[in-house]
Image (cartoon, rainbow, N blue to C red; front, top):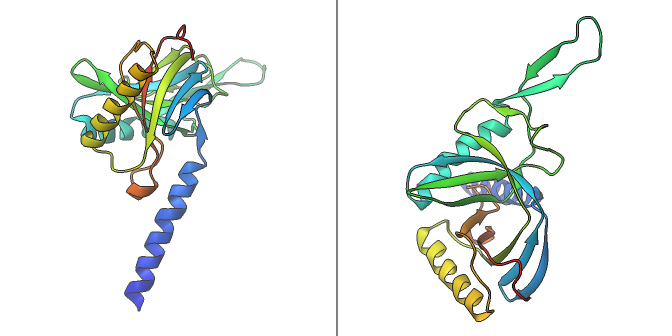
Length: 210
């Protein structure tokens, strides 16, 4: 009986954690066209905290996640302006940054670029400076992306399968691919595979008819 109770508690914690993760702020976009699991989306400009790591598709994400998570957890230099007195001073302090979904990953030559999207309340000037020099902050312009959504394991097999399906759909729609595919994950690692939201995103021409 005790063993059954423990199993129920563990499963409950996993499900609650997954639901909490789903409530995380998401990058905003407008759906221009939808067809089953496929969509054409228009994304507003955003800011990324990005790091580039070695490794295979599956291992690189885990390696980069810990680096980026430390940054948003306070491994940064937040410059806070104080009230004007004598003298005028500045104080450095680690600032916690809310998580924004998804975590994205794409090929960077022979390595992988993994990034967290920063909350929309920040600008490049107001974001705290990362303690880790391997993290860069960069502005991403507005863009149009084709997307396919799927659940399941974070495996290279699934990634390649859905990437091929999305590329085929893009060709069927008569759209032009303008950049490299992006792998987007919306849930933490402890989320059961059948509850995960995963996506492949591919940039398409903004001038294409939708």
